[in-house]
Amino acid sequence: MSAYDLVIKGGRVATASDVFASDIGIKDGRIVALAAGLPAADADEVIDATGHWVLPGGIDSHVHIAQPSGEGIVMADDFETGTRSAAFGGTTTIMPFCLQQKGESLRAALKAYQAKAEGECYVDVSFHLIISDPTEQVLGQELPALAADGYPSFKVFMTYEGLALDDRQILEVMDVARRTGALVMIHAENYDMIRFLTDRLEQEGQTAPRFHATSRPIVAEREATHRAISLAELSDVSLMVVHVSNREAMEEIRRAQAKGLKIMGETCPQYLVLTADDLGGLNMEGAKYVCSPPPRDSDSQLACWQGLQQGVFSVFSSDHCPFRYDDPQGKLVPKGRTSFRWVPNGIPGVAARLPILFSEGVMKGRIDINRFVALTATNHAKAYGLYPRKGTIAIGAEADIAIWNPELRQTLTHDLLHDGCDYTPYEGLEITGWPVTTLVRGRVVVRDGRLEGRKGHGLTLTRPLAG
Ligand code: DUC
Ligand code: ZN
Ligand code: ZN
View 1 (cartoon, rainbow, N blue to C red):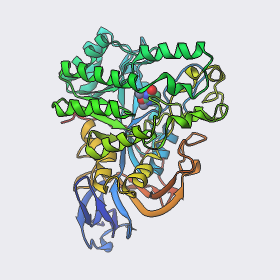
View 2: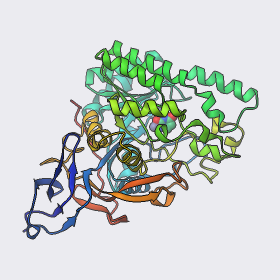
View 3: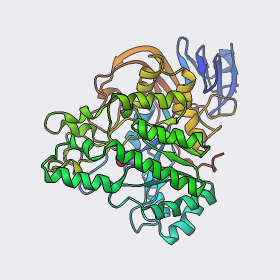
């Protein structure tokens, strides 16, 4: 029997803290050797990574898959296509949401999502819980039990009909999170400001997709971010402010961190490379970019880069929330033509996330390779309880690995992404560097840009409480 199932030879390995030349020996899905000159004869298979980066596979801790999104609307990805696309983009674990519908038991909701994922996944999956109905039963029994069973991250919304919790309800969820050791994730936008502005815009006939951005201004995000942080301070709970889009919200998080509060921040590719101008295309073209918070302006982009560079944001996620464009069950749902209010809210990005940050960040000198690894893998694993099992290259860690060709130049087009969508909002972006081969627990899922894995290899994971 060989010492190794697989050896990756000759690559340059980077973790969140180090860069070193090393071969990687893999056995039974785990990394068992890191050394120069591992003998090829001891391996069943050898992958030559000469001239390539060998990085931890990406962890994308903010992904929506097969989530109900309103009447007549269907999300573009199921677990097969969403995890396939993740693998093509160098991501080896995704963390999608289990959405509790009003009146539904969380346990029942989770079972339904697990069933949808079972046997379908190319990469590993671990669920967060969205709490839309914090009943006594949910707060007193289901959440503590689910946190202990391996689902220690709860997402709450401050906006959206049917989802928004009021401050008292958020405090109740935070209190459970503090007692159980779970992390709270929050969508921070002021619901009443958005409702007020949306009604006003509609009365004035300003209903095209570009007014989506007008209806959700920076002040609505900044106010809600400040309030979310205050609620977390009162509750003494760890909080992740997700999808931060602008300087004012970023500075709220920085101030909280400087005070010693347990506040973390996340930003996403759309806030680095898109602006509100992208929503202004002819006819309904702007619908391709409708997401919340909306992309802003060039100073907001700069602020998001600074947040990544300076550690205000510890994670960079996709907020992959895919709807087909040319589809009456997607962005062109008939009601969406009557107002931006009804345009499905979200954009795809699970495969584009890493190439965009690598190209715009590492290759353009904005961040180094160690910060890239931290922002795309290690910090996700640490925040959500997957570390050191995942998120790094170390002896004993699972062999989730992306092999990058740092010199491959291509124009980003939708056909590179292999998702269930029919467009990418990043079409035409010039990208340098691409994850050409992706391994999940030692198995090649994508090799040299071709799918080789089988669906069902990806597992649904539970997580211990973080930290
Ligand atoms: N929030 C998300 O987290 N994802 C998609 C849409 C939204 O508002
Ligand atoms: Zn959100
Ligand atoms: Zn999201």
